[in-house]
Length: 147
Image (cartoon, rainbow, N blue to C red; front, side, top):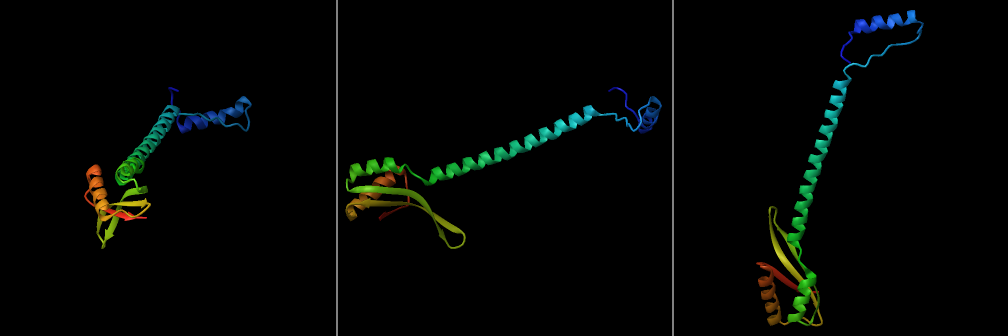
């Protein structure tokens, strides 16, 4: 609509409705519909952008958590196969990084291997297993326990 009606013009037009035989009728003129549509469009776009930002933040958080999980886990299946080649007595094992809390503010990350074997490994074999895993996985701290 090109012409914009004032409140007085709308009131005058509504008063003329009775002379046309349109009793109990009110004239409603929709003005600024282009502005309203543009405002609605902008509101929708802003909401979509807000949702995209939230999704991007969640994607980054998921990626960070996946990296944290990957950093703290190992391919136990593959390591078991290799370990059984060197130490046939090993039946199963679990290898993972564990965070140990020391006091209030400090923590130490230690890799822990828990193995199950027909019989406990000798001290020599434990040292051999520890050396092999440290070299194989580039580890600094490693604790080995029998289940």
